[in-house]
Length: 232
Image 1 (spheres, rainbow, N blue to C red):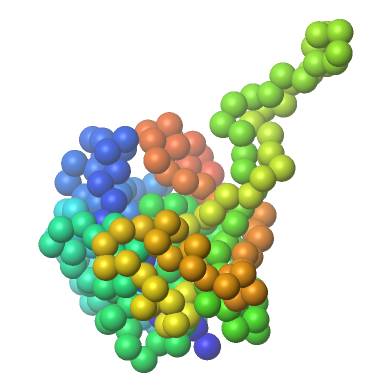
Image 2: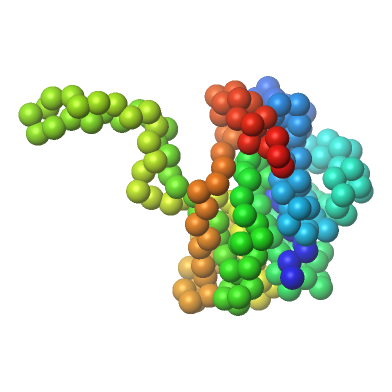
């Protein structure tokens, strides 16, 4: 059973200013609600009861909003980084607050998504994975022009799905991974190359996922979330 999570919530979101002048990136509102609110709804529905927020930049705004976590139906804890430790270091520090957890869901706190968390947990536990990563299809940020060998234009495709998969910033880690995480640095660079492939898995998802990195992303997300999350 997986009932604990860590949310990386210290992002400065410099490309989202002025929205992030007084709050960390996961606290930026989309359709009147913080990004992290959408994540917490999904986590709670999947059985997550306790969430550690790895925080640094403008953490006071995060702590004030969440308080004990009661408003979201979870127990909120805060792993405070006086100086940023990087994603891997932040995860390691936060995992030390969940000493009894065998497996932990971990998310980047600045993405919007709605996916099959139960299916992710099932695969991770059945395969006894050390780490399972959610991957989503790569969508081109640009429209594509199609043409033939004679350079004659055949048509256009607006931001098509490309034949590649990207890391969605959603994981499940076994506690076995903790000693392999850096005290400071990035887990993708420092830890992932050390994992045995037979216990290092992907979970493919074609459900809704959006990175919110720029003001344009924020504007587009505003149009999507009302429909996507109306049954959340």
